[in-house]
Image (cartoon, rainbow, N blue to C red; front, side, top):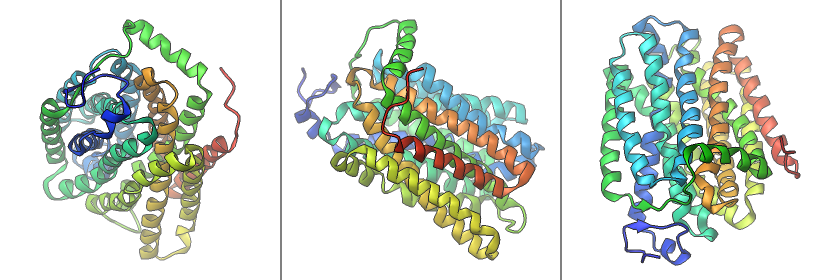
Length: 410
């Protein structure tokens, strides 16, 4: 087993080595996760301006975030397990190169059709974030895994939320194509940083690809805790995505008539919740992750319920309520996610990439479904229908976490 100063980390890493994990490496992991996953969300605040520019309907525009999330789910399911088979560093660098190309294609898209293809490719390549998070779990000692994963997830979650702020401002002042070009440049820079600073990882399995994928089914059937985590977090993700994928279009119309920058600014409210991710990790380490999942799902459900009060308020008060609810449900979503990751990464140290793939496949299937259902409900019945759907999804997640016995094997 190499000394901690050796640039190659073997798994599992001894606690003494992980305790000396450089903060610069934790920062690199967190930044890389945030920059890569941000690519999934740049389009959301720009949908109103983007649709007007290329002549796409509101219904068609809903497929942009849907395909991005679906691509992410497919990439997690089909590619993330390779982190157990190959050096994660090489996988991260390859995906970074593909993500740069996909973002540049989106920037140059002459029509909605090309943009939809680029959106799917962006989703697949952005799964480099799901190679980075298991890397953090591998480097962390068992007793502090929640804290380390929480620190890296802070970067990832801030990437998700602040991406909306950045894209809203850039799109309003420089155009939506400029945002995709800037995103490609940021991924290229973080790819270079990973090439220089990311350690190498030894494979934990030598299974061929077919056998590796086949092992996913065995892991799913064997671990009831994994199934509960994927279902509960997937339900929360559906409500989360329904809100964020329709917010910009809702604010663009009456009575608000707000542009991309205002829609993106709501990401600042959600970012406040992301800052609590390390606290959720520490609480999971000390009090157990099960408690954190219930508190997080309950907070998300209450926040979605509160949005039903909007029709009784003035326009300004509605905006304040939306911001407060965004803080609440983002905090609940993120705290629950950290706790679920703590649960899942503790199930099998040699299969963390595959366990992570299964968990996040469930999450991003929920994200894709939420974006699609949210767009449909908003087009047919308006914003209150979206909030009702989000509330029902969060309550469902809470009910899953309240049942003590694992789900039966399927």
